[in-house]
Image (spheres, rainbow, N blue to C red):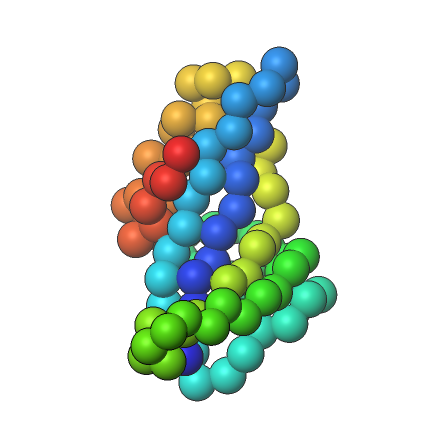
Length: 93
């Protein structure tokens, strides 16, 4: 099943960078599970799961929100985004 993982990287004073990764899973994730990905020192908890039904069933997907990351400043935030990009995540905003 097409699954889109996403989470925010926040910093003090505001400003959010969102990253996501699309994967194909043979099962559905649920809230409370831990997702470990390459490049992450620790796993991230699943905080929300929703299923989006599109007109074409092949386009339907599971949307999974993971715990946020918190950076100390804008430079650290960008560094985290760049690190995730090296492991197949994309910045979406």
